[in-house]
Structure formats: structure tokens, C-alpha cells
Length: 630
Image (cartoon, rainbow, N blue to C red; front, top):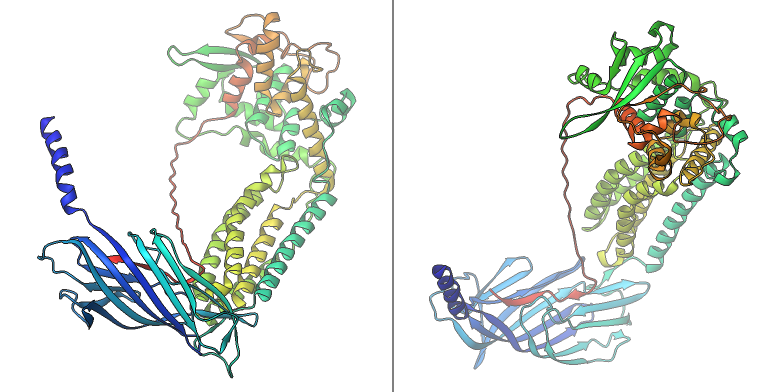
């Protein structure tokens, strides 16, 4: 402990000796904007070094379409003493360590550290391309102070002389600033008119802002049209029609639209898939019909779990198609089975009981009017021709544009392709949605970054000196992607099938609504339909809240036969399942145990995933950059 304390105290005592600081007593800039639009700059920097600095540094920020012509650097020591270009190991030598980073040496490594040493340097350079011609005017937005610095500029002065050929600003422009903290800039924005003959050679011609806004408006209009077309066509199919409210659902509605079909068919139809709830519904219906008998046991010592025990009451050969197939898979030659035995039997191979009934239910669904009608979602041939044309234009824009066109088109092209894959997959997964349209936000969330990129690059086309083809290409590319995603989101179902599913959803909502009531308008015979709709948990919760008082305690509870599946409307009350079925509800037994059996047995598998991210930044003015020491 004493050693650690000694190290800390030693570090605190020694650190001031190695501390470094750097500031500017003054930064005086004189500049001249000549007839051709070139900016000639002279910077006089009075730098105060404190510590073991090697020397000074100037980082120039050279934007798109601009070029730097460095002329000289001199040290003011009685008079101007030019520095030599070359070896940075020698004092009063300078060199560019990169195209935009200038360094010069003021002190050798073995020399004593500076102690508030002020040294004045004069830098001379010329910038081309600081003037941007757009919409008939020439814009200057130049930063004459370098904001990327660690120290304060105590006094800043600027004198900018403008050639008389330029109209629109009074010359000279004089600015004084005091105590410029790090990060603070001195940007001079001017809008000038050229009154000379010909065109200024040092100015850069950029896109018209009217053209940029025109491209952006057309892009947004195209996207709005695609959205309108999508909503119109889907509405015509009845996809966005409202569901029948719960208070409008009655026994006649349920008898006609729900109980006229088997519970497993209803469950498969409502969400277009056959899975665990349908298997549980088949087991419940078969038990109701006396083909099976069941009980629920609680097993385990440390980790207790519900186990569904089934007894076969009829020979499998006497059962209809998929019922026989399911029974053979669950009982594997015996007259009784349970969840634990099934797991043990299939632990090495895996088992999905939904596959046993899927084809049989699919055959029954075909009997429903309009179920198999699948109108074409889109003209995919035209979509891919449009997509290919947009891709070709994107490639041409990058190949024949300026220096910035290629990176923009490549970045937007790759990002768009990746986001298209994700958004199209999400759209296809949600193409059968006829309620809960908030899920449409999933593909939209994938496309949002692409829209952000495209709008940002389009608005920044003037600053980035993009050719007009590039904003057109990236906007067209995004429109093509949007169309593919929206067409993937269109439903493949016809109006009759959609209407049928919506009626089933209305019934499901009615059941949920009633299961929140102490005295629901429900029947115990409907229990298989509750399971088919995935509402077993709701029934258990209802029983725990309202039905426990009238239930029989049961660790091993049975679900006996009743009046049969399908709209048995004779029962005047609801107990959570009927008879011993209510007992199962007391422990959440039958529904939980049946769901566990219906889930099957998973085969061993593994997966992994990863990701990456990137970021970028930009500035809207020329000049600036950084300065300091090294």
C-alpha cells in the first residue's frame, strides 16, 4: 500500500515537469482575392511554446475542387529568415508529412524544453477553388482561422482585399477578434458577382441549387407515388379494412366463421402457418371427442415442470389421416405417452409434431372459398429491368464523374444493396399481415438510413462538387429499391381469403376481450379454439383470477370429453375448460403442458453473428484546418 501511494505522489510531482502547452499571442492574416478567384494568404503566427515541443504544425483543409499551392515559411527574428525545405531533424527546416500537413522544427530533441518561448512564423500560400459558382453567383465561405488547435489565440486580425472585378462586397474586409478559444473559427461568407471578361480560372463551377432541389422534389414525389399505389391496391383487396369490434361479435358470427371449421384449421388460417398452437388444438379436440384421454402431472424435485400424459382410446388405424399420423409419432406403438417420454425418444433426432398435421390441414384449407386464389403481387420482370437500369446509371455516374462522384455512388450503391436485402426479407415475412400494421415499420426502418444518405448527398451536391448525374442516379437507385421492397410487402392473398382471416382475427379479439371479464360470454367447449388462437395463457390467467374458487385442486388433472368441438352453445357458463379442465387451470396445467408437447424436440444446432459500423464527417466552409505543435 505504501509503495502504491509513493508511486501516485511521485507521478503527481513529476507530471508538471513534462506538461506542455501552446498558444498564440497573435494570428494576423492578410489575404487577397485576385481577378481569377484565387486566394493569396499570408499568416503571421506568434506562437508561445511551453514544454518539449519539436516545433510547429499547420494542417490545411483542402476541400473538393480546391488545391493548395504552398509558397514559403519564414521565421521572424529581427527580420524574416526563410526556413529550408527538407530534413525535419534540423532546426528551421520544414516538410509536408502529408499533402495537407506542414511541420517545421524549432528545437532539437536534446535542447532544453521551451519555457513560454514566443517564436513568430510567416506562412505564405495560395488556394484555388475557394470560390464556387452556382446560380449565377460566386460564393465564398472561407475560414481564416484554424479551429483544430489546442491553444487560445489571444488576438486575431484579418485584412481581406478583393480585386475590383468582384462586385457585391466592400473591400477591404477587416475583422478583429480577441481570445479565440480552441474550436472557434473566423468564417467570411460573401456572395460576389464577376464583372470581368471571360470566366475566372480559379473558381469552381457547381450545380445549380434549383437543379438540386428539383431532383430532390422529383425523388420525394416518386416515393410518395409508390406509397400511394401500394396503399390503394392493398386497400382494394380489403387488407386495411377494420375488424369487426368485439361488441359486435355474437354466437351466430362465431358459429358461421369459427365453429364451422376444426380448431386446427382456424389456427392455421389466422396466421398462415401450422405450429405448436395447432398441435395443441388437435390434442384438445381429440380428447374432447373421446379419441384420447389426458392428465397433467407435476414432476421433478428441484426444477418442477408440467407433463401432459395421454392415453390412446382408439386404434390409430381408425383415425382420420393426419390424426393417425400424429398419434403414431407421439405414441410410437404404445397406448400411452407423455412429454418426457417423447423428449427422450426424439432427443437425438429432433421432432416437430406440426409437420405431422401440416399437409392435412393444408388440404382442408383448400376447401375454403377463395383460399387458393393468389393474385400476382407485382410485375417482377419490369421491376428488375428498372432496378438494373438504376444500377447501370449509378455505375456510369461514378465512372465518368469528378473525384467525389465515385466514392458517393459506390457507398450509396453498396449500402443500398445491403439494406435492400434486409428490408426485402422483412417485407416478405410481413406480406401476409392483415392486422397489426405497425410491423410495416420493420422494412421501413431498414430503408431509413438509405433515405438519410441520399437526401444528405443530394443536398450536399454543391459542396461536394458532384456532377448532376450522381444525385439523379442515387435517387433513382433508391426509388428502385423502394419499389422492390413495397412489392415484396404486397399480399399474395385474394380479397376472400383476407376477409376470412380478418373474421378469424375478430373472433380472436373477442375471446381476448371476454377473458378479461369475470363473467365472460364464453363456453368451455371452445377450449380447443382458444388453444388454436394461442390463448391458452389467457385462459390460465382468467382461471387464476376468477375461476380458482370453484375449481378442484389437482396436481394430476384430467381433461375429459365434452359435447365435441365446434360451437357447442348449450353450456350456460364458463369455468376455464369444463370439469377437471378447470382444475388444470388452477395450476396453469393443461395449456402449459400441451404447449410443451406441441413444441416438439429441438435438434442440436449453433449459430453466430457479428457486425461493424462506420462514421464520417464533413464541413461546409473552405479554409480552417488545424495548427499547433508536434
